[in-house]
Figure 1 (tube, rainbow, N blue to C red):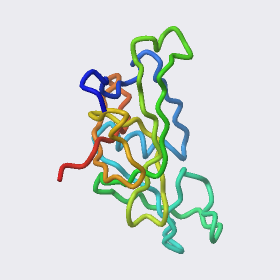
Figure 2 (figure 1 turned 30 degrees about the vertical axis):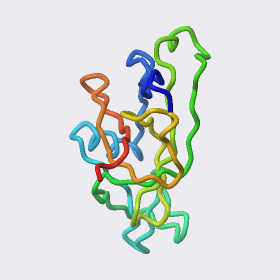
Figure 3 (figure 1 turned 180 degrees about the vertical axis):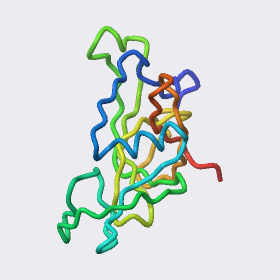
Figure 4 (figure 1 turned 60 degrees about the horizontal axis):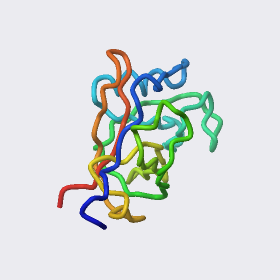
Length: 148
């Protein structure tokens, strides 16, 4: 790490748009309330993410939304140093990541990492959830290194 290395940035709010459907709306509704929920099959207790009409294990449609504590482990990531679109010119570097949620049978979320320099990011690092209120009706999960 160099002293002048920038912190990871966020994508511009105007580029974030959601199109929830009947299966994903409970996730996004909870996110607006700063709650992280994951669907779990009530027939076989399998977490199923992304949300779907049927459980991929037992084919049941019965589901409950289980609140999660907002902790995660970094499973994978990349660092975007060069803007692919003119609209993100001022938003680099950014760090899109795959975050595994503990105690969910391998459920993983895709989210940006924040409050970290790209050179400090390591697979397996403990992360904590930080909500980003993008628009009045849109809140997305981001993660930062967990406080020790």
